[in-house]
Length: 398
Picture 1 (spheres, helix red, strand yellow):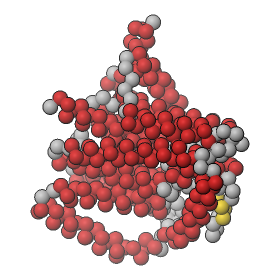
Picture 2: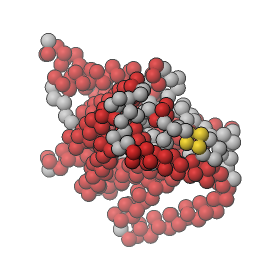
Picture 3: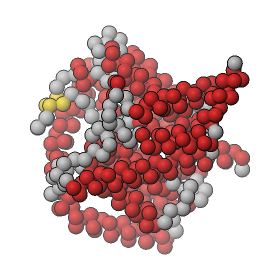
Picture 4: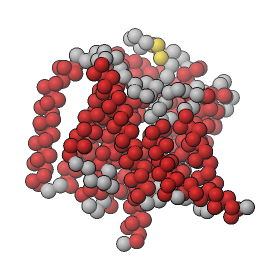
């Protein structure tokens, strides 16, 4: 029985099956509408089948875990379960934990499925293509209607902006050489899509991530190239300063800044006060603040969402899960710095810099939005871990 199961499920580890799986991920992850049962999407049902067969095969053969990342996930779960003690909305808590488990399994499966650089290339290149299409769609919508915030195929503008911002840093992939013109077109489409989302958080995150890549690459290159890069940055800054007044006039964009800051500060004050009184998050639990938390008044809106992964973990799941989240992101940061340190060629260094820039983007955006449940975030976290795994494997054979 075990032999036949391994043969049947082993089909999913063939190159053809992997290519299909990566294509399913790239094409369906951005399609968040229509929402099905319990906020699921079409992708989740196909992905669930793939995960089932992958896990059966891995459990029969050998399941590889990135222990340094697996331990923080376990800590998050322990803290989340403790926070559900005497919970007032156990159904919401349980659904949120099931989503967490699903995303963790998605990460573990991807980490095991991506076994070679060829697999990494198969995963990334289709994603870039569909991200370019999403950028084109949102940029076109912006041109047709400049007043509203556009969402593309996502639920809201912030989710769309986060997806595009993360996807931008995959441009630094080292697997195939891409000319300057295709890179420029891709960049314009992605940045146009980000502008179409009119997300202040995405704009700041994108700026910080891009600066990270520029600074790291500047430290690596010789003096002559440093001068050229410095001049290019100065030109972009000059253009940015010149266009800044125009950006200020964009409807539904920077005019929201003061109101957004005021609303977020009230959320943080309320959340921290609750966390101080209830450090383990008991009676609240994962995903429950929106239902049972106090209404936080802003200048124009009333909110119950915490709008921050860090704050939601602290308030809803308690200090134990918050520590797990810190440990998870700290471990990923360490992995990325190790990849950067061990990079051999300039292309590999630029790729590692791009991944670190992407990670900075995720960290910055997670302070003002709850992105922990985004499927595309877990996809790129698996890419980061897999890149480090392949790099270590290569170093061990040399």
